[in-house]
Image (cartoon, rainbow, N blue to C red; front, side):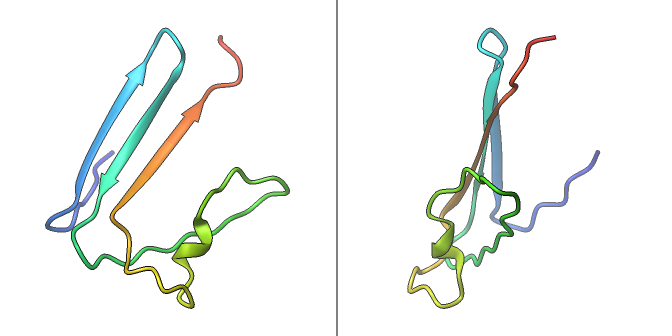
Length: 73
């Protein structure tokens, strides 16, 4: 898989194989605009309302993606 990154965008990730978890961070240049779509009956989102065009937030500094597998194989 290839990923195109606009100039100034940095991406990093870490995986803890013992705990079966990890995270990915996307650092955005100043003035970046972000949006999201939340689906499902019980989404685990936090602060996603700040991405609304009606919010007075200045933009996105970074995006953090985290996760954990529910079951070990």
